[in-house]
Image 1 (cartoon, rainbow, N blue to C red):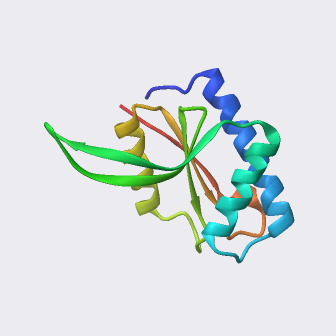
Image 2: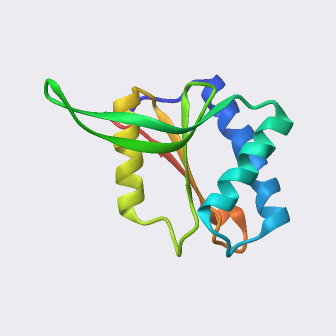
Image 3: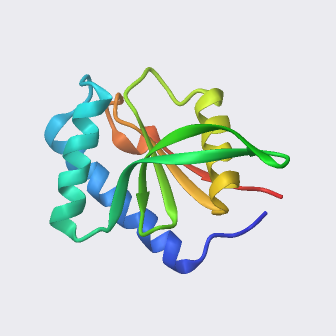
Length: 129
């Protein structure tokens, strides 16, 4: 398993702090797009660098088989997937693992805002060898 660097871990902590602030103000029950917009604003307020809705090319042997779309990439190295569903399902984890492989990054976050306490909606996904 490739361990995330201290720098990536620090970005993850900052992202989680921003997400907690968004959840504290908005609570559960809204559409994912609302949380995405609010989190982008919170990133701006906190000076967290990010890109939104990043196309991720999915390689297959010598071709690009298709593309996915990652909600955020923080500091050019931390993929962040947002959800507003009844849970973090295995398919969401599989999708995020594929993004990690395609991007060559060791750590991603899945944040599900549709929970009463946000810590119950945060999943760290670490790419294993």
